[in-house]
Image (cartoon, rainbow, N blue to C red; front, side, top):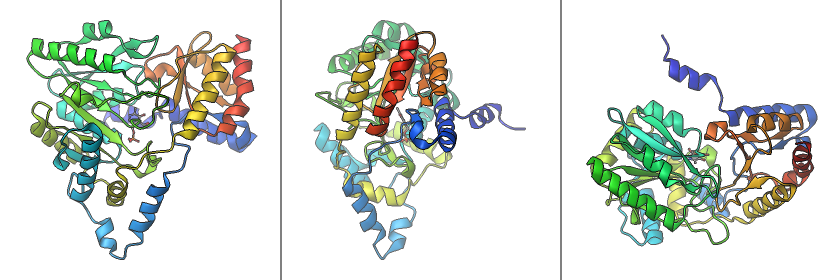
Length: 393
Ligand code: PLP
């Protein structure tokens, strides 16, 4: 017998992957230059030079055993110390290396923490629109997935809606800022209101409600947007981080979870998340990548290209009449379908070889997502198609 829910997850690609695969097939037929693929969130700028140099320098070492050996389960002490030192410097708080656990990207970091918090009848809140994988991550960890609509005017949190959905079983709220797919960056006011609400509800129900801050886009912010350090505002916050986007290394699978000392029961929660990583086989993240992180913990990405793309697509689409909140972070635009559902609109766009992701899997079937981590030239060439599609409706 085969586990049905695993079968369902493994046999159907996500809507994003399906579109992406379709784009590759279509490119072979009509030519790559005639497919406008805005489907996937693969970084489109090369890794920072310092990161490439670090890979070269580390692999050039003669002692290959030192590079490729197993590290301790949570990572090499020097790499964990480098991450802790960088976090301490940027947050102005003490950070211990022992509280950082390397994982193969943000995804296993999230699942480790979710599994650590899954208890009988537990519920986890995510704010709509949400990263589609949150649902299977939460459900397969053993908790109930509870979506809460955002304030659709600006994609900040709708607290009236959130308050209605917090129950005695709420264990955690996933906070993703900068947000995939909306590009929203939560303001200080939003985070302070969240802290107030969760503190009151934790007291009311007699147990902590944790924030799981999913931050793979932390450094990808534009204009004067600022990503606040949530544990300083709400202490019961765990951070899941990834180098996939910031260092353009999604295929190298490196990230971490960080459970600060200010989290209630932090040592037990850390051990439980480490235990969850262990049973998923996610201990000892790739050693080479850990060493690159050690060498580059303070390196920042160059956002010029992403910012240029964001401005170009946002300005063109809004000029044509599309409705969209200007993203302050990440590399996506979340746009209201001009008429009908986004699925219908995306299907129509597909006929023109324009690949945009309908928002159903993000919990928002009236919106579509367009990734701006693509070439600026492709955006320019796609604009007449976007224009034609809105003129049709
Ligand atoms: N969380 C969000 C919001 C994402 O957009 C992604 C990837 O796109 C992930 C988590 C997973 O990232 P990783 O590649 O580090 O596993």
